[in-house]
Image (tube, rainbow, N blue to C red; front, side, top):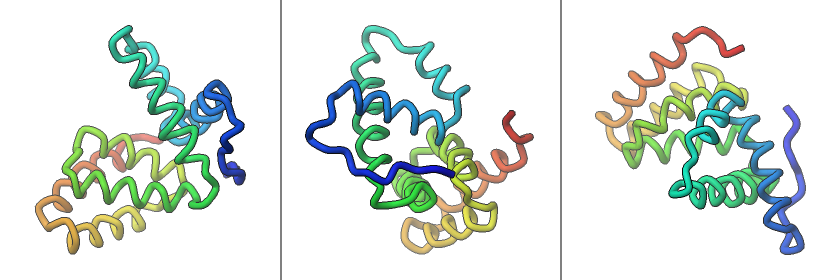
Length: 138
């Protein structure tokens, strides 16, 4: 897995951050997911799609300080902590793409059980179980 190592600089333009962000977003979430999100973009949601592509994916995920595996662990934990179940399945798939094993994802949820609560971890295990049982994406 190739990851960017350079931190975004103030000299980067919004277009450069958007381009790099889209590249990483596709690598982490998969083309099918990003294509669906892009196809569903409306005039109302376009500013948000641009924001997450430039900022979340084009600055944060590309900083080069943390690798994608670590970021995936953090995202899974944050989603469990906040109960963002609609996003969890997508990020379990992303964690697998980023190289986490089923055992490692389970360990993230075990850690989350201690700090976020057993009911939240139980819900996360159920969602992940269903995702991990899916056939591999093409």
